[in-house]
Structures are given as C-alpha cells and as structure tokens.
Length: 413
Length: 87
Image (cartoon, rainbow over all chains, first blue to last red; front, side, top):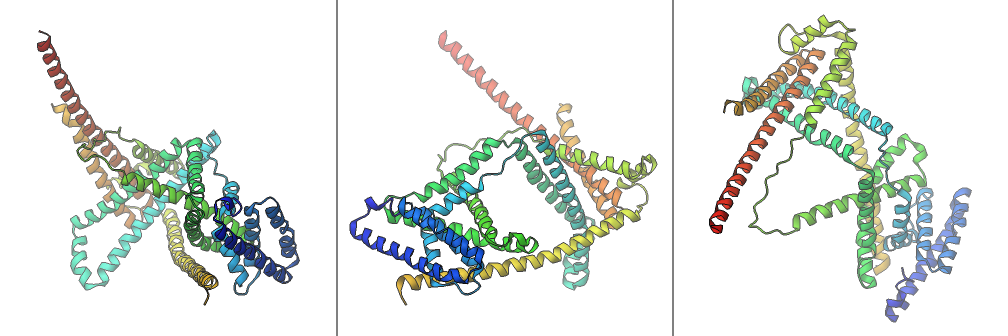
C-alpha cells in the first residue's frame, strides 16, 4: 500500500507517512519481543517463526506481509494475554484497521464458497432436509397453536378488563373463527412464501449462479478497497469498509463464544479466524444485497408509464407441498395403526367432526414430550439471548476502550 | 355462461371447507385427539391451497381473455382502416 502509492504522494506527506510507518513497525516489534517471554513455548515459537514475514515484506516491498504478521501476532496475543490490551496492541489494531488489504485477501482466498451439489445424492439429502424441516415446522405450529390457545384463555380469564373486552369477542363463534383465521393465514403465508420459496430457490439454484453471486459480492468489497483517487480517499474507503467488517465481526463473535462452550476445540486462533471469515462473507452478502436493493429503489422511472399487471402462472408449490405432506402423514398413520383400516376410517370421520373424539395415550404422551421440550428450549433460548447480549456488551466495551485509547494515542491527552 | 362460474364457486367452496376443517382440527387438538386433529389440519391445507389455486387460475384466465378480446378488436379496427386507405 504505502510502497504502492509512494510515487503518487507529495514528498512532505511521504516523509511523514514513512516515519509514522516505520515507528508503527518498530514499536510493536519491540513490544512483541518483550511479550514473547510471557507466552507459552508453542506460541512463542510461532510468533518468532512468523517474524520472517516482516523480512519478506520489506525485501519484496509488500506491506501486506507485514500486516499479516501483525494480524497473526495480535490474534496470538489476544488469546494468550489475559491482562489489559497494551499500547502495542492498540497500534497493532490501528494498523490492522488502516491496512485491511491482507486480511481481506486471506479471508477471500481462505473461505471459498459453499458448493451446491446437483447430484442425485445431494438432491435426496436436500429433500430429506426439507421434509424434516416441514415436519418440525408442523410440530412447532401444532404446539404453538395449542400453547397460544391455552395462554389466550389464561390471559382472558386472569384479567377482568381483558375478560370484558377480548374475552367477550373470543367467547363468540365469530371471535374464535377470527382468531383461527389469523393463525391459518399466518401459517399459509409462511408455508407459501418461505417454505415453498426455499424449495423453489434451491431447486432452481444452480452452482454457477451461487458462485457468481458470492464472487461478485466479495469482488465488490474488494473493489471498494481500491476506490478513490488519492491515498487519503482510499484510506477513507478502507476505514469505512473495515468499520463495517469490524462491526459485523463483533456481532458474530458472541455466537462463536457460545458455540465454543460446546466445542472447546474451537477455542484458540480458530475462533477468531473462523468468526472473521464468516463475518466477512456475511457482511459482503448483506452489504451488496442491500446496495442492489437500494439502487433498484432509487432508479428513477418515468411516472407516466403505467405499471404492468403481473400475470404469472400461479405457482403449484403450496398445493404440491400440502398433498405430499398429507400423503406422507397418511402413510405413517397406516403404518402406525398396522393396516387396521377400521381405525383409520374412524380417525378420518373424527377429523371431519363426525364421532366422539378419542385421545390416544401413546400419541398424546409423545406430544407431551415435545411440548415439554419446546418449553425447555424456550427457557434456554432466553438464557442464550442474555448470554449473547452479555458477550456483545463486553465486546463493545472493548471496542470503545480501543477507540478511546486510539484517539489518545493519535491526538495526545 | 354457467361454466364460467363453476371454477370460482368450487374454489370458494374448497376455501370454506378448509376453514371448517381447521376449526375441527383445533377442537380436536384441545381434547388431545392428536391423529385426527393433524389429519384435519392437513386436509384443511390441501383444500385451502387447492381453492386458492383454482381462484387464481380463474382470475388470470379472465384477465387474459379480456386482453385477447381488446387485441382482437384493435386488430380488426386497424384492418378496416387499412382497407379504407387502400381503396
């Protein structure tokens, strides 16, 4: 970077920038060499071995190699040192923030893209996944509706005011039908928009499109790194970009901390590298998708032109999906009742509202287990949300401390 | 003329029937008749999506028919104008 734009810099800036750059290289090297003695042997050896990156960077005038060394060292120090971040670390981080080329390069070449297989095996796997998702979705809908009904009746009975208002509405046939209609519309909306949408998308998605989309998203961010004419314009774009990446990283990192509680092997440099890679991909996709959406919205069109009526062929996906689900359910019922068609006929009649309802002990115990598990997951979910927010707060505290110290460092007290 | 209204009528009947099935499904859910309630809900989904598909197809077919009629009329007018000009 600095070596690349050296020719275009005015000489007074060049000298100042070079001095600063040399200081930025020299001081952390001193700090790192002092800090290595605190590290365990393995990490110390790693840091010492990676020092040749600086030599290579200076010899081949590639500042990216120097930055790579700093990224590596800062990750090692972040993991090993329990104490407060030192001034050297702040310098390292400031370097990392200002010179993001290499981080992006590593991440872009490192992450690759998820291959979408179009083989029969992959398709079968996909269909299994979708069907199990649908089954899970049905179970959750069933339980959620039951819970919702229980809760609404509890709420209505508990409070005099709600009993007077909602209770009266819900007690009527119209009110209960309205509630039912709302639940059904929600379910159908999700089924037709999301589930069949996912099915359509994945079935019509080809490898080339996914590859192009991810490549163009990352390519866009990569271009943004080199946007701008003069070096300070470039610096502005880079800082903005790195800021976006950094924030995405901070939002994602707590999830990795939670994941690392279950997989202790994830602790260590993997945690940071994996989370950085994921955050780069996510921020690239989100940023470019938002940009595409906004540019579509902002494109001006002549107001005199009448909007065209969309006359697409209606999608049969919801119908096919529901028929498949009904067939699968009927087959499983036949297997469950061991080809006893009398019981099946009775079940069918009961579902039409003809005949007395009959509660199967075994099936209702299974539903009870699911219900308990669902309530447990809901309880744990609150815990995980709190944990996530806790990690997030600590990460943001760390960020604000970093920025404060950076300002102090750059502008004096 | 009567045929035109058979499709939407069937669609509306299917949607209404699906609502009845959902209602019956919820009633059975409350008394924990699991097998029947799930069956009722799934039948409700099939009839609801079938009814909506029928209604949508009918509406789109009507719009296309209207469009085709307009185009035919337009072509007829142009043809007669050309005939007049050539004579």
